Image 1 (tube, rainbow, N blue to C red):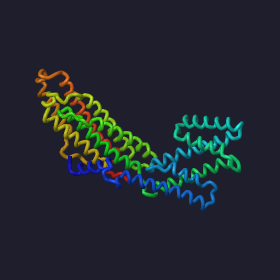
Image 2: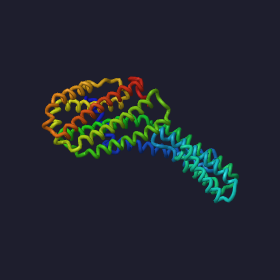
Image 3: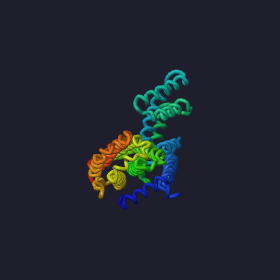
Image 4: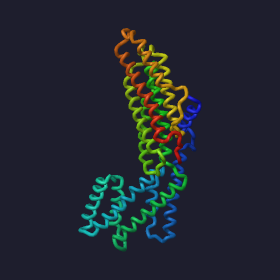
Length: 373
C-alpha cells in the first residue's frame, strides 16, 4: 500500500471511529444540522409575523419536519410532505361535506392510507392523515375549503424555507457523503478480507463477526445515501458511477462471505502452506487493490493505474503453483485440497471484480473528471 493510501486509510478510519473528539466530522454535521433546523424554523415564524399569517407556526413545523441532514433527504422529505398534505387537504375537505363527522373522518383516513399505498407514497400516508384530522376535527371560523388552502399554503411556505436553508447554508450533499461512505466501505472490505485469509494461512481471526457487521452497516447506510442522492441535481456521470460502486461493493461482500464459509476451520491446513509465496503475493495485492479503489473513490478519479499491483499475473502465478503441488495431494485430506481450490476461485473473482470496479466506473464518470460539490 502506498503512502497516500495509508494516509487515506487513517483519515477515513479516524472519521468512521470518531477519533477527532468533539470536532469529529459526524458531530460537526450534527451541530450544523441543528443550527440549520433552528434557523429555518425561526425564519418561518418571523416571516409569518411580518406577513400577518394567522397560523404561521405551521410553516415552522413543516420546516422542522422536512429539513434533513443532507440536501437529497430534504428534497425527498419535502416531496413526501407536500404530496401527503395535498391529498389530505382534498380528502379532508371532500369527506367533510358528507354524513356524520365521525363516519366521514374514518372513511377519509381509510381512503388516504389506501391511496398512498397504491400510489407508492407510503411515507406520505401519515402526513395525509394528519392534514385530514386538522381539517375535519379542528373547529375554526371560516370554510373547510379555506382551512384546507391555508394548510397547504403553510406547508409549502415551510418547505420553501427549508429547501432554501439546506441548499444555501453550508449544504451537505448526499452524493459526497456517499462517496466517502463507499471509500470507507472498500477499506472495511479490505480489513474483512485480510482477516478471512489470515485464518486460512494459519492465524485464525477473532474479530471476523465485528468486521462483518461493520461492512453490513456500511452497505445499509450507503444504500440510504444513494436513495437520498437521487433527489439532488445530477452531475455528469456521478449517479451511474456511484450505483456501479454500490453494486461492486455488494458483490465483493457476497464473495467474501462465501470465502469466509469455505475456509472455516482451515487454520491448520498444511496444504495451504505449499501455495506460498504465490498465495501471499496475490493476497497482498488484492488487499492493496481494495485500498487503491478506496483512494480512487475518495479522489473521484478512476484513471489512476495502481503501481506495483498486477492481479492477473498474481492469479496466473497461483494457478501455476497449484499445478506444481498437485502431485502432493495424496498427503493431505480431501477437505484441505477442496478448500485450497475454493480459495483460489474466490481470490480470482475478487481480483477481477476489483479491476472491473475501477475500469467500469472510470467509463461511467468520464475518466478523470472530478465530482462537483
